Length: 217
Image (cartoon, rainbow, N blue to C red; front, side, top):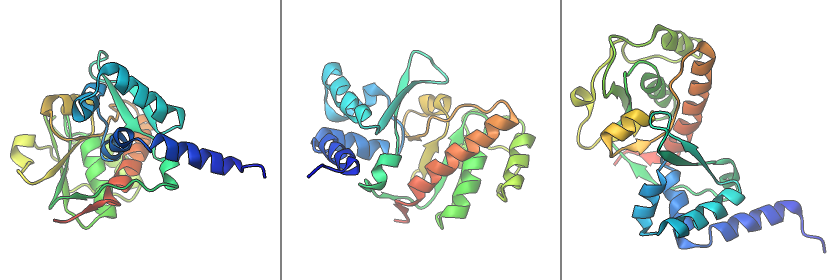
């Protein structure tokens, strides 16, 4: 009997995830992006062995590697979730509150918090590592077009907002590289209205994925 193409795809996915290290990599990436160095450290891997594991995952469409939008010498690996619809890799996350962080707290972080509040009962807010003078008016306009509400139109700093037990999600590379410890979503800085629409779509997909596995402690 000829094997169905869908079965071959599923078998390839199961094979890729049959190694404990690769399964662990996917579990980590299901929460946020990681640099190759972070992945190597997490699993005590040499660079050659990490490259092998990432190639196996990349060959079945599970991961993508891209350069940092802040420091082009760095790279980040992110999960491509579509193949996991069949496998449902869902690590659990608990937190009393989620704080989304970007550099200026002008667009990405307040947009992410606004989407989160439509998806989860867990409270959410936003902050910046170097807050600008105000929230970007174009980000406000995009939010209003999509029926989203910001909790405020002023910016705040990480030092003002973040508490010890918060789940901190850095939604830009620069903020993540400054914070050092946070869930990381590598989302580019929006420059135009079209960029803002694309960023909102990326953030919505990320929020949906995290909200589905997050709960209050």
